[in-house]
Length: 173
Image 1 (cartoon, rainbow, N blue to C red):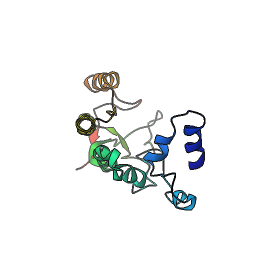
Image 2 (tube, helix red, strand yellow; image 1 turned 30 degrees about the vertical axis):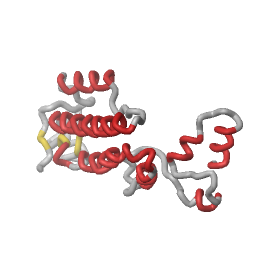
Image 3 (cartoon, one colour; image 1 turned 135 degrees about the vertical axis):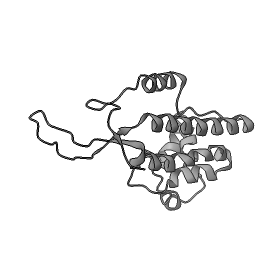
């Protein structure tokens, strides 16, 4: 993979070398050493991955150190999954009047948690972008203005997923 990324950049004119560089590849490295990087990509909230070694490698590169505040996202995502940030249904009934399965199941984030999470993500984005401007690097958009407006509108409208409303018990803290 690394060979193709470097070759595609140099010979085909695709801007792929930056991708390889972000994951720590140096074209002077031995291929076996590069493959041992085993750079993981994918969802930052993946519950199967406990250490974001790919991001750790990225911020270890002096060119990308300004992205270090992004390392706060993973712990934040793990925190927001806790029951105290979620609604919980008790006494939910089926259409026939019998108790639904999974009594006490966790539901969506309550409104205060949504506001708090949004504030945290925006603070991380601001921290990264302040550092980016200081070192002349590109800024990062975790939530753009259109997304922010929509999120805020949904929170303000107290929008809930289907079969949920704000009139259920909050999970115990």
